[in-house]
Length: 450
Image (cartoon, rainbow, N blue to C red):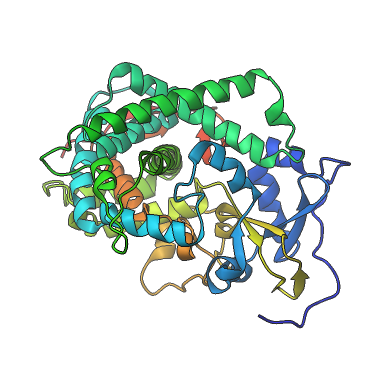
């Protein structure tokens, strides 16, 4: 790594308070706060307590940390707090164990398996949007959460959950996400030890999720399905090529809770933001609908989704301008140099994909929703500028699954309905480990019959 570095330190973000630093801003308005930092430097210091965390605001430094020099970084302190709830799943594990788990899980996300999932996605999406009535006002974020939960549980477990278990998961996943985010940004580490109502709700929600998933694992151990295997069955049967060992129930649990949490909340937020943007841009909505009309007779499949180029561009633009992901943390394991600054071992770094995706140096007019910026022949963004699913060795294993889900749901809904914004309703982004819209009420309007 380069050794020539400045003797100065990165600029500190404005608004630092005694003792807690910028923790209040990260709790109250994290998206707006991080988005403002691109005006200062490629790296900006923020304080979540007395020590700095360095925000990576430029794609070059993000690519260095995530890809080129990834061997000099480990997952940061927020991931250590996540382990209390997600165990050693792919989102939190590192090193040889992470690579082993990723190899064991990879077959469950092969294109042939995704094709099987797409058929379930299409069926569930058709059922959901088919239950709506013309003129009905729906909470789009809640609708997408319920649909994403149904999709994830169907593909994970090949069966609909009983009503009580589904209700518990629907209630508990957001509680766990919010609690984990609050703990990650707590600069003292003391809040989680207090018997607050929020901490009690978090503990109860986590216990219910634990019992539900443990029950599903025990039940499946007694008999694997003879038909197309679901993801749970594949995890139970996966064998390490070197040792021949399979996963323990604890390892299976850790991967399932990670997939359940990430695959529900992130997908739901991405879809909700996408429909929000379609509602604000009728011309984009019309062009999307025209493409879907020409392919309405095709059987849903993974290959079919590749024949919807405009839909793909709409999905990419939604992932850019309204990325549902949260904040990614990394910790230096050796002395490192980035952007001319030198940092000691143990230095903490963070970046937000949403901030990178709105950088005007790489995306002109960055707040404009413009799917045509992804047309072939357009100037490509540099490495590290567009990371909707992360990068490097920890890139999201479920990227193909997530893209297939977003495209399938958009196709099912937009063929039949247009979601129109309600006059005077203010939609705002909310961060609970992921970014999703709150108060997204929209009216269901039938498409014109041709």
